[in-house]
Length: 305
Image (cartoon, rainbow, N blue to C red; front, side, top):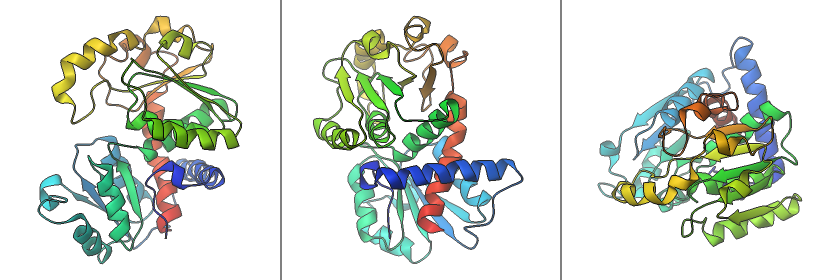
């Protein structure tokens, strides 16, 4: 039995197979609908954080594949408070064929996987967001027809989204550069882990503070919110620190002529990204949002099919 917790847990070959499956399932859906591969199977969805894309995409993915999804709100379980993570995992394993969890602490996802006897999927934690990264790669593959040899420039906070995107880029042969303000870099342990994968696939990971240098000639520009859930107390400070890292028309003009702009959403328009970029000719953010559905179908079929 396998879990989908971090992309570093999977080989590059396995992830490429999942990506190909996502493309197949998306084509199949658009050609009349998916086969009921997960008929009679259920996915428990544990949420500690509010969600638009994660909840709807997983719920619809299970429906498209003939299965059923159960939404479990934060106050229904009280994960790790009202009931221990291990007990929740063991109880749910007796009811469903898979568990997806969108949590604050990455440790909770690891513990769910430790105690569950069914596959566990990381729907987001404070350390990583592998489902989002897979959808990002699917979008890049559709736009460019390939992944190998491309260049991603991430501009903003060295957060969980950036960490998973870095790992995904390493797996799929994409050069990854991240520009952050000093003090907001990706954790060294995450960079070292991704660098080992990148070296095997012949690509580089670069860390810098100069956003213009990072973006110059890039095929993909990626940004995310400056204030993640749980960091609300730091809002004023972060907005001030990150204001020079906005993705705007001037920055996009430095990238490759056919570059695309990605954002995992929700976007704080006028902060990390301008309206003109989010709605402009380079934007692929809504194709990217839709691809959460199809990338996650591939993960669900791989783990539960």
